[in-house]
Image (cartoon, rainbow, N blue to C red; front, side):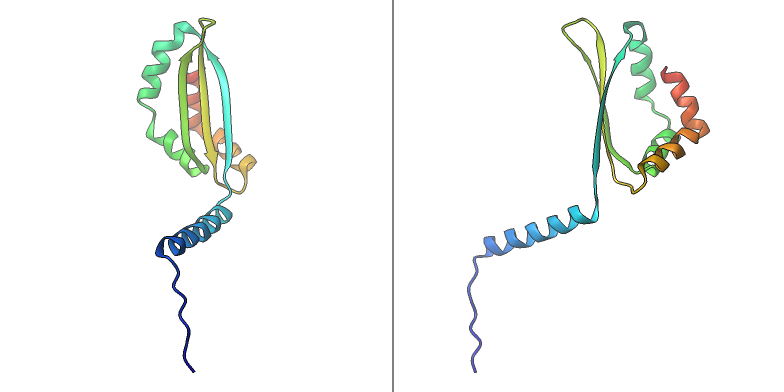
Length: 117
């Protein structure tokens, strides 16, 4: 008995494989996206820029340890003349409330936050 081989275009096969692998990766890692907007006082602008240009390594590590990825903050002055911080991050953990409590309990992070007020 002869086996019949069906010719499938290579590009179609690669597309099917990519789709399958991408779907599995998304299912394996649930990502929650968060964003916020807060105002920044004009007199704090230079201080804020200097502080965040030299973010503390311990704070960055805590962010990562709490399953936060792709954390970005954008500073923008709107037409109303005020400065705003637009932030975005992705959470990849299983216990958001627990991870945020862990971060909030960290003494170094608490100190960082005190400088950011």
